[in-house]
Amino acid sequence: MCLEILLKRTDLTVVGAVSSDGVGRDSLGVPMLGTDRDRADITQREQIDAFCVAIGDNRVRQEISSDITDSGLLTATLVSNEAVVSDTAVIGEGCQLMPGSVVTAATSLGEGTIVNTNASIDHDGRIGRFVHVAPGVAIGGDVTIGDRTFVGIGARVLPGVTLGSDVIIGAGAVVLHDVPDGVTVVGVPARPQPDRP
Image 1: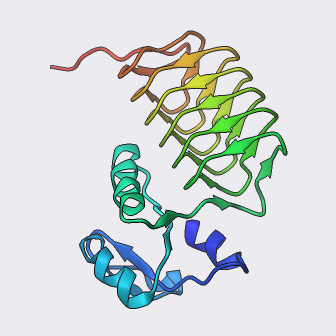
Image 2: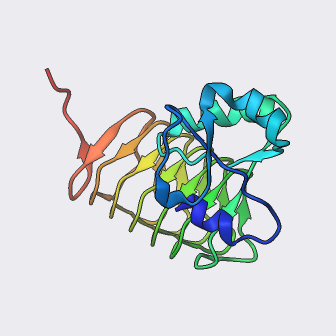
């Protein structure tokens, strides 16, 4: 999906893709240039100045994005033509807003955050770095989300709730109360997932 958004932009040229194993899909419509490990050589050979880090895993996306920016390159920010973004929203570098996503008034998205297909974040949201808001999620107003948190498909987060860093919200969960750092919650209403043996 990121590639489709990139290919519609007239302000840049997509030269190709890289992956962890160097294998791509014919349907992408761009050549595979190599693996993640070849990134430095590819950057010089192709005169690349920016990458789009299209990886769903928050921690891996952060690590690769940091490597890219540490080497002096940019991480591309993608906003689909089918996304709705308030003029008062602040979108960090490397964010990805997919088709049907909605980011409303006075909301800020930290670097590298994904707001996936048909997900919405209401007013005054404070979303950390490298967060992933999965398809169909609805986040109420005045919600704070810490770095690297994952909000699963179709989940709901009520207004005023704070989610810590490295939190996992299960698919379809309804979050009524704050969730501390590193906790996984599931269900309706969302409750901490018991430790498994």
